[in-house]
Length: 268
Ligand code: ATP
Ligand code: MN
Image 1: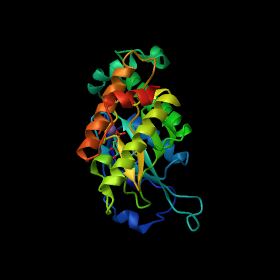
Image 2: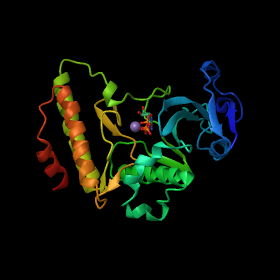
Image 3: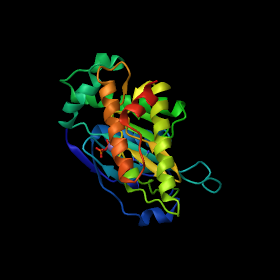
Image 4: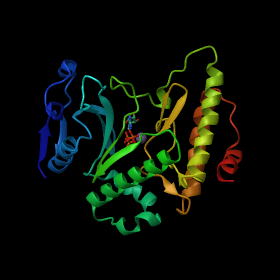
């Protein structure tokens, strides 16, 4: 139960291969023993070599940047990765029960009494949903490994470890910005349809906060709460997603379609 304060930044495989790294601000991670063990295991298994500071600290999870140094550091570039660690000390998971309850995939686990189990389930759900998206060719972080409440995935960002901005923070440039917004809107409707038709999923928390943007491409993230069609509230969640998306793109000046039209387009 005692929280261990560790600097995983200093846990490296072999030599300090990149002097720049030591200049980087070293983020202190406050993690419990169990999480620490999982991270060390992931380092030992060669999924990551180094874990850096938090990209995001949220209510339910923190996301950390990480780097994997290739076997041949002279020939290959380091690979950036992202690690999402779900928080196990939880009250916020309470209102998430309604997503899990009614999901046939997770019936066995909807045990309200057990936080750790709930969080594990939540991470598992994200991992499996990401796999579905990835298999369907929807741009998203490729899920790489899951252990309890710790998920390693592809890093969406540049080679220096800067994450792509959320759509909320994206700054489009050029003399055709209106056109670009229109195209992103159309792109997103296509993604929502594919998510529904091919993955059998409704995102259920879709907004400009859970979409990353880079180079005219939208990336879908944060799918732990996504549900299948047969979830009793799936269509309600879909309507909410459609509304959020419409509101955002209207604020960018896009001439959006009616929510009903989009609903039919996605589900037909
Ligand atoms: P919060 O409680 O803050 O909403 P969350 O549980 O919603 O956290 P995510 O939305 O999955 O977590 O991720 C939080 C942030 O971390 C994202 O907005 C994004 O900036 C960053 N992020 C998540 N996954 C990745 C990734 N694979 N690559 C780069 N950045 C990422
Ligand atoms: Mn999010």
